[in-house]
Image 1: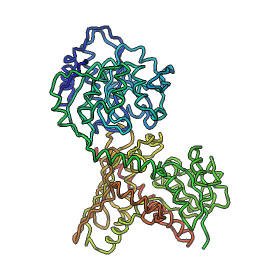
Image 2: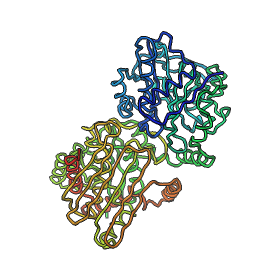
Image 3: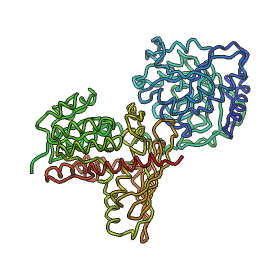
Image 4: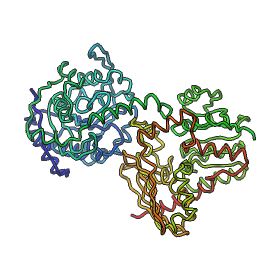
Length: 296
Length: 327
């Protein structure tokens, strides 16, 4: 059983965010009294979207999280915000466009493009699939890996949240090569890079439409987080392969214990996709692949 | 009338659309293509193009080619158009004319000196609904037009491919002010400014507000107020900041007011357009229509419009908008 905290925040100013984050961490009994010299924060910066769309982690949320760590951890740990280049996104632009360079300067933390870091090629096996990932050294050297995902629908893997966000820890930029077995690849990277803490930025979410949800979710178990998130999004966690597989591989447990605000409060508000939306999306996706290749 | 032999320089996003349309033109033959990317050249070969060049100067030295379509990044317009003009080729150039007025003037001088034709690729001018609007304005349908509002807000260069939801890798020059010459105003605003000048004539005053939502050195939004000598005041709203896409024009006159919507294309309208294309009916495709018109002009020895001079006027207005920026 893993604790998953739900905290509500309606005011997105720094002090309110800090208070809600701390509340969320206290609810899961997060231990600040440990030796932490190096913290790695991995937000979701999947593309050049504005944080107000709910597609990417809000830098204000990450800024507030850094403040909480600085205030509560003993000593003064080095903090790094990390992301890697992807097929369609380049860190050197996304850091600036999403406002992470400003946060890094303001909070005196380092922005790291994992694709430019020293890394080692590591092999991992999941469900008869063998994957090779480029794992940056900085991840192995850190004392605390903090995963700060968004909660979204995604065609190929149904949902994307804590487990999928770690996919960006693979330094290799052409991530589309793993798409033939994406569920297994997601679990593979989570086997290699262990998340110590998940803090979901549910301030603004992107479901059927963009919505201000005001949710902060915390846990030390990414599988438990994704279990709660999939339920909140109207999907049975058992239907989400990456979650089931991650649980089997021992990355976490699909048995969350919810603490804090009532689940139904957020579940009711989350802009869920209807069957009609899903059919339309599948049709559009199939149609693009078959008929609109000339525009690719 | 003779068949026009074409060459295509640049097979990026826009270039590929031109490549397909060149192959559909009955009155023209695509002789060769040039691009620095091997992948792009492979794509052209797959479509049956025999002459592929890594260097566009080699394409320009092909004596068979009468005219070239240039679909290159903004910073290469001056160099490529000058070389094409010197090689005696007529030119279809994707908008904008250049990065700035000075470069635009050099392009026009080169075109004039070499006696070649230059047409700018403002495809909106060849959209059926826009042509109808133009006819209505000329016809006096609106009475006297007083206020116009034109909007084009999208994700700009970050817009998913093919109007569908597939993320695209954005070439680095788009992020560089020096290479791109301008942001949303130059990219999207040039379309609308050209359209409004076509409809209402000379602009006498320009004011603008520029936005930088994404912290780039290039503006990702712009609101421009244009005062026309003929009377109307127009607001041009453009942006690269949105995941969504909206494009419309509202014309308010003393007799009638009208708002036309050019977007967003619904999935059904995309399907219908694709079916028509598969059936060989391209008349409603503005990119096809503009290219067909360009070829017709060359065959009949007519000066094609929008001309380079119009492109220069557009750049002058955009330059005024940058200079007269509020704040």
